[in-house]
Image 1: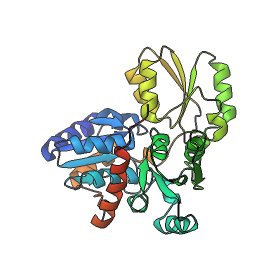
Image 2: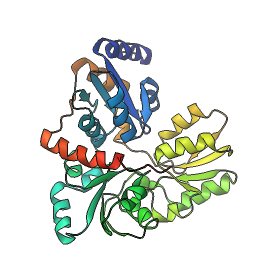
Image 3: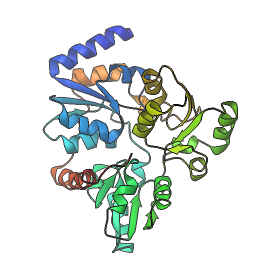
Image 4: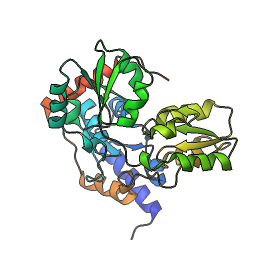
Length: 306
């Protein structure tokens, strides 16, 4: 049985031998974030993959994230240590169901959150992130928008725009574990703490937030804020990064249950095996890749909000 240090040493050795780079999402296990070359949100990591002079991208996240890296970096080999690490919310919309919805609203534009499969991205007009969703929607000529797959993000966007938003009935099970009652209890216990909520949270949770921010938005806001205490309303894995980057500040999770089991599938051992065996390769059919990339490229042309 290998110990943690020997696995880490071997990962670094394999990485150098194979010219690989390790990307880890903010929600990954602490030890995965610690061995990663870059830690960030899903789209930010995929864009980082494009910049890297690497032959292999080891993507420590869930399926749609590795697909995004493959869409944007087709000349590189993208591998994912745990092939079963899927996103339940992304699975709540399929190309077929989206096409059927478009038939109901033929004059509507379709905006899909990056938390979707490559095949669904290929069916939409433009993608968005939680940080730029409002700007993306306001950039469109259409007044009616079908927004997939997250109804909570859709409802938040609807409150920030005059356009008509048709939400998809999808949601993130992990963010749904964050309840307003739990947050109010934490606020009572830590009256000086700011509550930062991710827009995938329920509406009643967003209503009591001091700030509604994407994961990258949280990282940036905390660094600039004069506050010393924060209650964090997103998947608890991000607290590791926040603690490391802000040792003079204190962070509390909004709910002990806000843990994504799929994000936590990836371990040091599975990263080591993925580099040894070059598995599991993520490949997107070229026709789908081109259409999905077009939707991502359109998004990247829109000025990003803070």
